Amino acid sequence: MKLNHCKIVDCTIRDGGLVNNWDFSVEFVQDLYNKLNEAGVDYMEIGYKNSPKLLKGAESAGPWRFLDDEFLREVIPHKGHTKLSALVDIGRVDENDILPRNESMLDLIRVACYIKDVDKALQLVETFHDRGYETTINIMALSNVMENELIEAFELIKESKVDVVYIVDSYGSLDYKDFIYLVEKFKTHLPNKRLGVHTHNNMQLAFSNTLIAADNGVELLDASVYGMGRAAGNCPTELLVTHLKNTKYTLRPVLEMIDKHMIKLREKEEWGYIIPYMITGTLDEHPRSAMALRATEDKDNSVDFYDKLTTPEVSFDKSGKNA
Ligand SMILES: C[C@H](O)CC(=O)C(=O)O
Image (cartoon, rainbow, N blue to C red; front, top):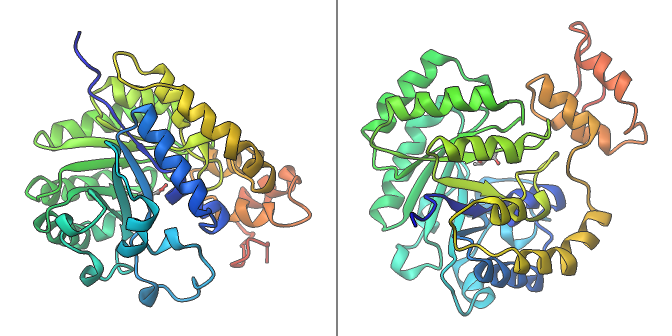
């Protein structure tokens, strides 16, 4: 039997941290690592490896926002076969903070960027590659990228050392036709690269879009336990684990994590398919205005929210309120 080509990258801590300001206990993270390892999940993204020096106003965040190698060694004293990954952002990472891989707990470093910064992202990728890490470049907000910009980026990526190139649906606004189109485009222009996919669930399509990408040859599939991720959340890990065929994955340990931690956490924190996130998804916008709305007493007034977003002469201030 030919084993499925896919690998799951669980992003619960990194993307879920955008929901609770990375306020996960050490016990939670240890349980998650152990359960993902038991379930056969390939990678766990344990947080961001950005530098607090380069990101003002983030002092209140939990330790998973600015991973520290010493701390990681204490949290995961016995590493199983699940590899550890961290995400970095352009302009927020100090490359001097990244140890050579053989001195670090991390195996994979993923560089997130917008299309205009692909050149800078690839410079970072080269540094991390030369320090021994597996690398990805995650081009965010792809639904807002012009074809000509993408083609220019492909030229640089093709010649680079990056291992995996991600198709990222940051706004949860793409459907199956978009994914088939994008995967084909990436495969045609980057025949020498492996591909990854990261989806958001604004339109209830995260799981199905991930499967379509996988069926079309994408290898690294991002997911989060119970879908925990920014705003509408991500493709649920438990669904991939149980649904992908010809794999070594098992569902039971992920269900144990959900029973022990995720149900309680979801009562305290909010993420998932919620109408204001559906609205920003269908309008192909960042969910920040919907997130701001959900923090107000008016949080369920979706008609008013929709009217504001679709009325060109109304503008929003930074908190998401209309001005
Ligand atoms: C690098 C990640 O794919 C970034 C992310 O979560 C996004 O939605 O954008």
